[in-house]
Image (cartoon, rainbow, N blue to C red; front, side, top):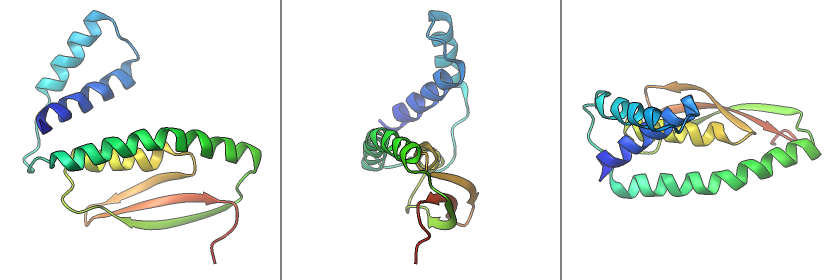
Length: 129
C-alpha cells in the first residue's frame, strides 16, 4: 500500500510540474513514476502516510486563512526556528513535511539538516516574548 502512495506522490508532483492532463502526459507521468528508483530506506507506515495526507487536507484552508490575514493585517516581524523531524520519516514523508510547512504563507523551510532538523523561517505580527 505504501508503494502505491509513493507512486501517487510522484505522479502528483509530475502533474504539478507539467500542468497537463492530456492522455499522453498521463502515460508519461505514470512511466516516470514507475521508473524512478526507489530508496533503500524502509517504507513508511501506512498510518504515517494517512496522518500526513490528513495534515495536507487541513493545511489547504489554513493557507487561505493565513494569506487573507497577511493581506488584511501585514506582518512585519521575522524569526527563524529549528523544528525537529518526526521520528521514522522516510524521504517521501520528509518531502511532504517540507511541502506542508512551505505551503502555508507564513512559513518556509530554508534548510533541511541531515541530523533531523528543519530550519523554518516564520513571519509574525509581533515578536514572540
